[in-house]
Amino acid sequence: MADSMDMVQQRVQEELARNLANATHRPAGASEFFCLSCGEAIPELRRRALPGVSLCVTCKEVSELKSVHYKGAAS
Image (cartoon, rainbow, N blue to C red; front, top):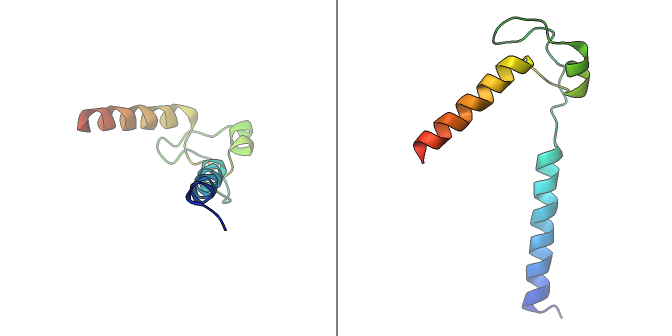
């Protein structure tokens, strides 16, 4: 019979596996040829490296910076 420590370890292992699966999940859809934000062409190497990409590097960086800024302001 499993004791409480075994059950805790199993739960931690399951959560770790779930978090890993979520972190490595990539969209299966086709990448955009042009950035949805600015309309510039997305380079082929970026489209191949990130399946499902919809923003160019510059727009993605701006989006991430805005996200960090607004999250910081909410704290």
